[in-house]
Image 1 (cartoon, helix red, strand yellow):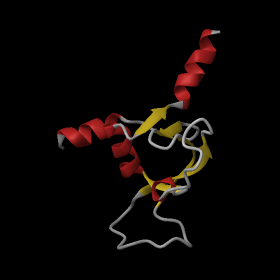
Image 2 (tube, rainbow, N blue to C red; image 1 turned 90 degrees about the vertical axis):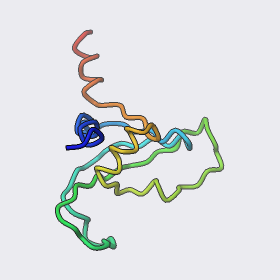
Image 3 (tube, rainbow, N blue to C red; image 1 turned 120 degrees about the horizontal axis):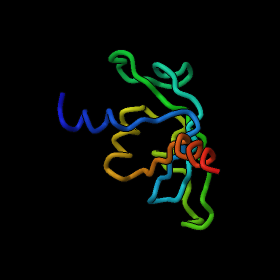
Image 4 (cartoon, one colour; image 1 turned 180 degrees about the vertical axis):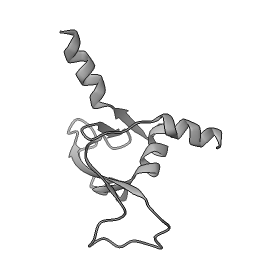
Length: 106
């Protein structure tokens, strides 16, 4: 196992987590994790079992109001690609577990 893969394995993402694409200010809510690409979408050379996330994107109106949805803001994201984006800092990740822990302290 490579060091990069070990780092990616430490990133845990769950339903209800929030992701933010910093360059555009779009906010995504992770809705569903599923195996293999869904029917109705084009899949290129299925290599095996791949995990995907269904994401609902919301616009942060405080930034770049003229931005249109870019290719990155697909409602379906591959899990390893999402983890890589989080690792390199293109996407911020906020776990829903963080919010549960905060509620417990009240």
